[in-house]
Amino acid sequence: MHPVVQEVTDRLIERSRASRGAYLARLEAEAAAARERGPARSSLGCANLAHGFAAAGVDKPALRASTRPGVAIVSSYNDMLSAHQPYETYPAVLKEAVRAAGGVAQFAGGVPAMCDGITQGRAGMELSLYSREVIAMATAVALSHDMFDASLLLGVCDKIVPGLLIGALHFGHLPAVFVPAGPMTSGLPNKVKARTRQLYAEGKVGREELLDAEAKSYHSPGTCTFYGTANSNQVMIEVMGLHLPGATFVNPRTELREALTRAAGRRAVEITAHGAEYAPVGRVVDEKAVVNACVALLATGGSTNHTMHLVAIAAAAGIELLWDDLDALSKAVPLLARIYPNGQADVNHFHAAGGMQVLIGELLDAGLLHRDVLTVAGRGLDHYRSAPELKDGEPVWTERTEGSTDLDVLRPASDPFSPDGGICMLDGNLGRAVSKISAVKPEHRVVEAPAKVFDDQLELLRAFEAGELDGQDFVAVIRYQGPRANGMPELHKLIPPLAVLLDRGQRVAIVTDGRLSGASGKVPAAIHLSPEAAHGGPIALVRDGDPIRLDSAAGTLELLVPDEELAARTPQGAPLTDAQWVGTGRELFAAFRAAAGPAERGAGVFALNGRAEAESAARAAAGEAR
Image (cartoon, rainbow, N blue to C red):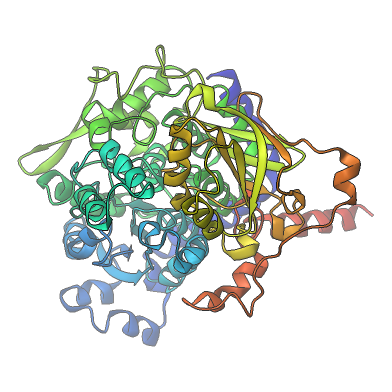
């Protein structure tokens, strides 16, 4: 193993020893009970069980007999969102596959799937991050009926996959297989789309031209093809061993896609506690798998959103991941992929160049991924060097021995695009922040300029439209955008106008306690600033004209104001009150807003799983010692 990867893993194991131990003790107790009793529903009373199969149709006899393993299907299907629309037909396919494998599947529940692409710059975006917790809870509700021995999780985008996984990890003794839908085929090149957005921001093209470009980019069922949070999800889930090998980037409505869906259903039956290959999700997602996900994110220049999602996912498995771990790994993991916005290729081009099999193989051979891990495909990450092909209508996996076929998209670890990862952490007197630099030109990675302070993204957009930002260097400070202020919306609508100014030769950057996305692109930015303005963060002390230095190379973020002057200041601005934070259902999420943790702890509302048991055991041990 690479020494830094091993050191981070060892620290993670030691730091998480008590909480992870408590989590695994609970998992093992539930697993032992499952093996002893047989299928979960066999322990239900007659009235309980009758409710569980009343509407089952052809599967009613099998459900009543309680001898076949039960498999829950939990889906994010809706027909508005391209990424999730393909899931409409999956339940019937999966039920048939599970039935053929000797199990019985039921559609256990749906989870909401909202689209950040639709809600960008709108009030609905302020619910986006909170939706992860809602999805986790909805997953728990679906699995709470004691009818199931495994789960099939259908989700792709942004908060949906983290939410599904967090919920599933609270049922850690159950195996969980994620079933992807795949990306849409390539449409209008991303470079053309981005250029059209900038022309629209400059007033050089109209709404119809912009809408035409967007419609040619997002044009059919499947995930958006740029490398944002959705596709970063898929990369990480495969590297964590929760997809079948090579399932991630196969397009929807193809024979191979359907064959892989059927295979996922069969595999869910094979890895229950009642078979020979038991693979509970709480064992699959261990410290090594978490580190592997971090490495894959960094090696591909993935979405900054996962600096929060990975922390929250790890916590659900009793593992305490810190930004310090990501920072250490980023200095050691080379950048092997260039996918838009970090290059011109999309995920289909990445897949065609060798995709996940080449990426995983390169990282394994370089000692950057843990090989000895449990996956849904079996023991060992080497399973994921193999790519699926159709033979007689079924997927057959063959190890890929050749390297990348397009070195402009995917490179070997011996000749990377960059010697370090595409995400770095910044520290300084403004707090801690995340910076995605994989798409930022080297000459833009250090910016020192006066602050222009905004308490709302719309204020910045209005200033741009009025020409108030022209011809000057500045650092845009957008505050009161954190999880406790307004749900930490993505501020991606700011990128086109700021990119216009960057192209004009101005030196500009963003500092915010809000989010950008995996599509944040070429504008240098310090995001997820913690502590946030609404929770006592120094960003609330910044004034217009204050010099700020953002130095991605040095990993620093400094407000260049004397300490004594800062100490004399009082915060300016304020988050919306609960009375103001209404409309678009936002008032329903006031409890989340009040309880949300800081970005560096995952920006969630759930505690580290296992911590309560570990602390209780420690108190009891201390009492006995006295």
